Length: 340
Image 1 (cartoon, rainbow, N blue to C red):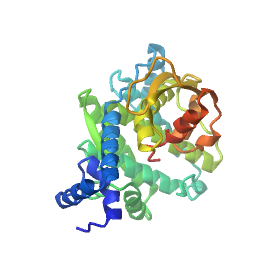
Image 2 (image 1 turned 180 degrees about the vertical axis):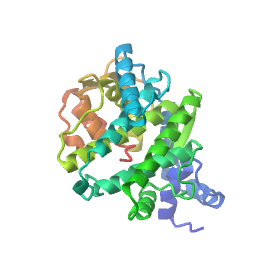
Image 3 (image 1 turned 90 degrees about the vertical axis):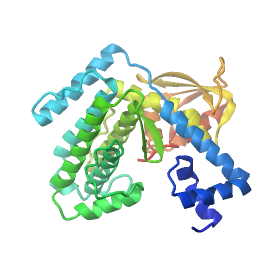
């Protein structure tokens, strides 16, 4: 293969995840021997992947758990005419809550609104197709492919394939693929061990983190659709927001490393109001100290919109105690893993 350094640089992420062909691995390894900077980048990416895969969210208060679980069951029962029967897992409740809310939203999109442009430039219809593309990728990753003949994993190229395939077909067809993919993920989750990990979208995500990540994107794109059709934006239920916030904040050490904004010898405290939470974290791969060097306080919904790249980090309303440059780095790096 070509040994052009620019091409090899593009392969570093895949190499860090052991996702390159043998001949590519040989070329990358030779490149690492002559390029200390590239070797450092691979080491950082591998640490980030391990950190993300190991991240575990905290258990929500029981009352919030019950509220979201009941809402998820009710939404699914209303759509399918029966009980979801998915037990009492709060992570599954988060996933079913957001996929159910999106499905209900799509039922109410006016016929003339499917051609409207959304935040990322896709039409509403194309955005639904993108979601089917993404969810079917996850279904394949967990061993239950819903579109087995499409093996492309690059997000943009896979979306383009789906948009072309479903362009002249009824919208119901692409929604059916999305629903089947959601069901495949749900079925996998109910039988997967608690320590299961899934390589998808360039990361290896733990079982619970995977469902929170998918709920996060689903909510973000549902709001994209609401914005496009002139409806008010809607935050997720409180327990869902808490899970999203927990995953994003506990991933911040890796995000800071990937974004090149790490301060491993520093400690930050992130306080998200409106039901978010309070976290003390190292600002890089290190140990958190007892006293934070910076305290960043913001609204949980605003924070999540920055994480999903729907609000510029510099626009995040916040109060800061301590080193404001560290707060700027926290906000800027929060979207390092966004695929939205």
